[in-house]
Image (cartoon, rainbow, N blue to C red; front, side, top):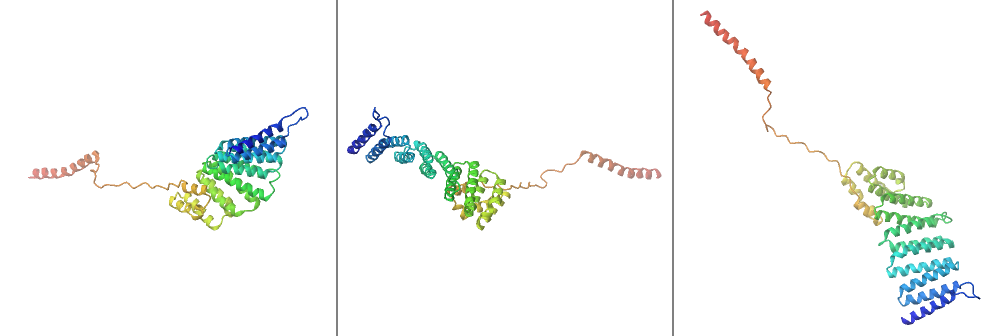
Length: 328
């Protein structure tokens, strides 16, 4: 180990010597300095001194950049990303990836720039999903804008990065942005005529719109892209939308449990599993009526009228008795 570190330090001394200027040497020798720093980084890595290895790679990248060797500078930053991963120093990875991508683009290699963004995003996806999301979004722009946008392979690569953007947004609960990302992904697949992929994305878009609580947008998405779905997908989506229209939670649950939804990308499968079901239409219960629970109400007026009607009926009978007595 000590011999490797001593060797690395000797390479560093040689690199610093190359960078010095004098009366007869007006310009630093960036080319040889970059090579010496790169050799020092290799020695430090073999000696498991990762901090010093990363520092030497950064210095080598700077020397290449000063020498206008942009591709080699980007390669050094690319290697520094892997060293940061080994060190579990993930905080610097996004910045390094963006710098490397910028150098690749200046060199005229946008595909290499998108690749380094993708590599860094995969490292960050589990622990730093927000940083990974930004790197994937930049990768989509790199491969779909400029001179490469008419190349079919680049468009397919852009669709793959857009898919990762949408899935991370779903994972983070960013459903509004996820719907836009899915539509962009559909547009990229349209350019290469991949109807099967569009059909699967139509299902994903319907699920995202339902997660947003927008049934109208979900139905619109199905009407717009449903012709790209296969028979099983069409049947499932029709049942699902009918269930939400009829407020039928059981039918919705059966539709969301269909095999092809369970075997979608894990983010969409989880979304379908956790999707709020319609609450159903509740019917108010009939009131129970107990017969003869209280005495019937009788109006006081009805009693007085009855007495008044009864008295005249007895009058004539009394009068007949008086008449009869008088006759006697």
